[in-house]
Image 1 (cartoon, helix red, strand yellow):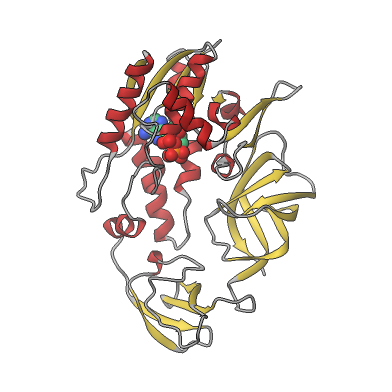
Image 2 (cartoon, protein in one colour):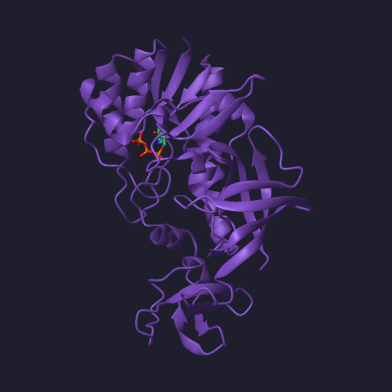
Amino acid sequence: MAKVLVGLSGGVDSSAAAALLIEQGHEVTGAFMKNWVNAEGLPGDCPWETDLEDALAVARKLGIEFRVVDLIDQYKERIVDYLVEGYRSGITPNPDVWCNREMKFGVFLDYALEQGFESVATGHYARRRVLGNGQAAVLKGADPNKDQSYFLAMMTQRQVRHALFPVGEMLKPEVREVARRHDLITAGKKDSQGICFIGEIKMRDFIRHYLPDKPGEIVDTSGKVLGRHDGLHLYTLGQRKGHGVASPRDGMAYVVVGKDLESNRLIVGWDESGTTGLYARRCRVGTLSTINESFDRPMKLEALPRYRAKPEPCRIEPVDGGIEVSFSNSQRALAIGQICAFYDGGRLLGGGVFEEILE
Ligand SMILES: Nc1ncnc2c1ncn2[C@@H]1O[C@H](COP(=O)(O)OP(=O)(O)OP(=O)(O)O)[C@@H](O)[C@H]1O
């Protein structure tokens, strides 16, 4: 039995997590993190107020204390600035992964520890195990369709030690059943989407609010001009739609295969394996973070280059500035700034940032 602070987002997963912790006999308090206020006139619907009401209703129903923790300034500093800076410099940031390290298991965990809690619990689909050496490990969630361990790839050992993932042992329908059994208002609520905490705002609108458009040419891989773009930061490697260049080839789309920052040109090519820039087998991953062991020797592992990717066998080798990753199969659209998560079977070892795509 422990004193646990559970992050109640107003969704079904964290509601069920709180209910399960109570069933397990823990002393549970619920908290809603206020991270984002749509005070800057951003377009889009930001449903945080409804989420807060739902979180409060769940806490009331479960008979637990409920707090609202204001982390708006920290969110601006640690996530919004990182996002804007990332897009400004031409990379593809990953706010969802950084949110876990910086917010939920960063400032929110620090708050919890200061307030006398032992752990922070969330509704993530991932499992946690205590190893023989006293360290904690993260395993993939039991529901293969829902596994969210990818998002935890940048967590530290200290953070994992103070984390609990009660729904990670269950399948999604079982989680909804827990919420139903406790008569929680969130039992039938649909899953949230969008940038971590920002709600349903489209990333494009979000970026445009902070960074001015910077139009330039769209060219093919031979340099032929095909159209115009609004700003390189608004496009992602591998992107099929939204660049406005129609393909003359039946069943073969143009996709973004590169950005030339100097000439402000967006490069598009055919969506096929031979296209330069679209597929790569080797890359350097830096800004490493590991949970139980360090990547200080050559190892054969599996990697997830993005959420919901299929685990890819790879070999890693320490190099200056991180590790060199050689995938067994070439990978489509590895984007600088995105997170690569590493696994040994079902166990999450850690992650890092794609910093250089080699070939
Ligand atoms: N605003 C928030 N306040 C408190 N905790 C939060 C908040 N947003 C997210 N969390 C915590 O982080 C977990 C994962 O967040 P994510 O946004 O991925 O939600 P989810 O998988 O849709 O889960 P849920 O159904 O609980 O919303 C949530 O289950 C919750 O415990």
